Amino acid sequence: MNISVLGAGAFGTSLAIALSRAGKDVTLWARDAGDMAKSRENVRRLPGHALPDRLVITENMEAFGADIVLLAVPMQTLRGFLAEHCERFSGTTLVATCKGIDLETGDGPGEIIRKSCPDAHPALLSGPSFAVDVAAGLPTALTVAAKDPIALQNALTGGNLRLYRSTDLPGVETGGAMKNVIAIACGLAIGAGLGESARAALMTRGFAEMNRFAIARGAESDTLQGLSGFGDLTLTCTSEKSRNFAYGLALGRGEVLAEGVTIEGKATAKAVSNAAEKAGIDMPITNMVVAVMSGHITINEASELLLARPLKEE
Image (tube, rainbow, N blue to C red; front, side):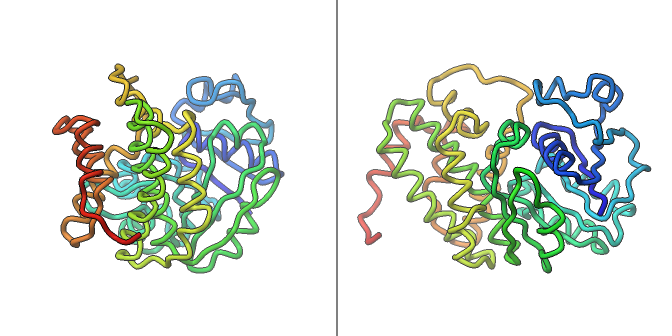
């Protein structure tokens, strides 16, 4: 079964490396395919990790005719990308690897695929995974979600990648989106010196927010207990390898932030806050993240507001 990876960012490249290393037939689409093919390395996005000899690299979209296409493009560009290229994906299984909520429509990646490419088969790949770990061959467990995920699970499992399957697309996509928002909150807390206990509280209450929001979008609660929910939340809230946590950490410290780095949680926090307000869902941590990012309140003010909320049963 042929697999294509569209997008040569760090994560897309790492998946292409891992799947190719596991003996899969993989083609990686990249804008700078010529340079990568010569150096056999993604110097800009994933330096230090050699591209397997069997991995095909191209910048020609016309070359794609794979059975499975992994969409490794940023969340906020996914809808536009599919609108431009959807005709070539008729009958194809499209697996989104991005995590977030579209700021304009409020849709997750699975819903965007369904609406943008109605003749394709939408699927999601999510879970606790850093690109450098995947590329280095370290053990990584992920969730693949689709209407019928068994064939995908078999096709994408191999080498250091172990996949679990799910049919709950709303649950998998919402867990992947919300964990980025809570990771920013945890980064803010640590950066501002609020302590590890505050981070643990944010992770726990953030997980409750994740469940409320996901269930309101048709998800199954059990899904959030798994890799795409609790697992990904744990990883991204506790490591500076997480771009969302690192962003919150820098913001909490008052540091100048690096440019050109995709922080999916920034737009997702706004999208989730907007959707939750319309639906009447209580999302205090998400709302505080949005308020701090926009400069409406300070981190200390956000902490005081959260602590002053009415007492309730857990």
